[in-house]
Length: 502
Image 1 (cartoon, rainbow, N blue to C red):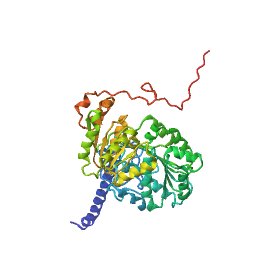
Image 2 (cartoon, rainbow, N blue to C red):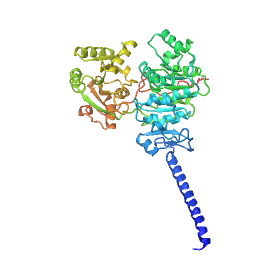
Image 3 (spheres, rainbow, N blue to C red):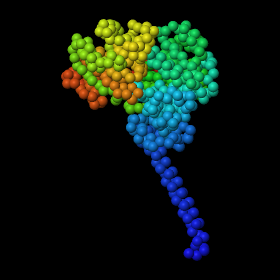
Image 4 (cartoon, rainbow, N blue to C red):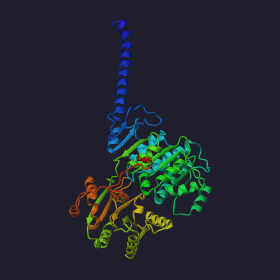
């Protein structure tokens, strides 16, 4: 080798190394672009795991996190995100950008639930969000933790007469549960939460609001509207609004109250988060009126679906045999006399009668229904949660919103009036990733629901008893509660056209 060749060899090696490095960088960029491309839905289909049209590079502080395979995560959990921007899920708590004090709310959990993993990066990006998810999916923390972070980001939590965060809920029971979680999560942050709801002393609630000056208000729409109209509460500075179980609030008839409440919020950069179990036209219109360019996150289907963690058992029997069959089931399901079981009935008198008979059999039982006042309901739920009364007899007033951990069994002593109520009832078990079992009594009086129940069981690959098939599998056309099968879903805000005859 000549001296010139010896001198040129190191230079050649350096050039080759530089070339290889550029090639590796180029391949890495292509790989990243391909992964980002896979996060998008380039056919515009809302049924794909991610919908991201014209996806742009996400900002490092919000969407870029180190994850193995986000596409597989979305497919595994049946998550679709309808957005023009691609968002990577925060599948581990370490991916989140929450303050340390906010993160204490998750200390007892191993990892975020799918609705949390999908919604958190979007809400933290200051986007309005519509979350479509079944009950028991962890949606309370899906909005509570970003809400706390929002309060802290606005500045040190200073108590004023104007709350920063407002959560609207359809029922007292659900509102109280949300308050409990927000209070627990907000303690390390110095954030106060107060719950206001109907059926309780209004003057006492006003005193609490004046004394505590909370940053978070959890409320049922009727009572909140009453407090606003009486000038007992000013929500004009609310900048983080949550509509929880929006479909249920509209079903109950709270739409006008919701619209009135939102119109009282004057903050120019209000962020709105809406959660619903379904995505009907009424919810779409509400979202269109009050949310700004929202991102829709769907876990599973837009339609109400059964929690797949719940094993369904349906038993067809004579109406007069239900009580004796219940006693037999409790010998098996409640052998320890300590595990939690919810027994659903249809009517208040039925609940009172069944509670009395179970107490006569020395069972530790509580009941919640329309004849119980709010204090009695809270006491019954507390005794059920604490295990002093591990049997709970309930009407459908409790079917939506109850979030009680470790409910092993749900027994439908009397079949509900609608298949939606059936789904909500059995959703009280199998929550937070746990397994559960529902046992349903079905009689000839319920045969009008046989077709819908058959479809639910088939979809869940559950056993369909022959006696249920004997009632038929046809599904009746859905009817309006007032106008029957001839109802047309017409926008009530559209003014009629005056017809003039010459």
